[in-house]
Image (cartoon, rainbow, N blue to C red; front, side, top):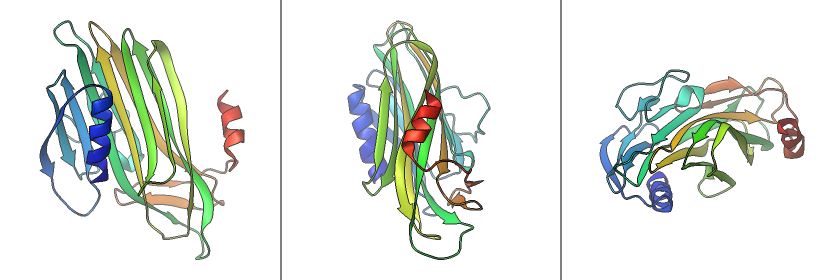
Length: 228
């Protein structure tokens, strides 16, 4: 599947070998991947549940996350990684896929709108974070990595979309955190939102994401100026 291929690329980029573990198989919604480990001992777990953590427990956005967690009803992913003196690289991350659709509008032609992933958190010592947002199959994509310590991590990934009411589209989002030797620490959170649709529209998903789309400028230039 696409998520596993993407995970392999992210893992390779951080110099780790990922071993995929048991799948929580339900073919209703796409699979998601959570992974954690140091050096060549990283392990991944797949799940199709709406919320999940590396400890194999449900997780809700806003609650503490020890390693890697996701809450798709709230469009939230979280990754935390901390280096140590016994291993070169310690990596944690999340890759999620969900099927979305526009609701609340009368049937008609496809309309332009956008998705964005807002990433916040902090980096301390030798560490890095990689965030990605993409429409699948391969379409619009955005990514950003940060490799310098910053106590107030904040950036927004943005991708344009065009779909009609009721037409399903797949969005993949990911966070991969790397804590380097001896004490690098990354704690990052990503929240998915949609914008640029007419008033009254909502976006809902297979995993029960359903939020009204705020009235916002549809141009990315206006959004970028707001975040400066």
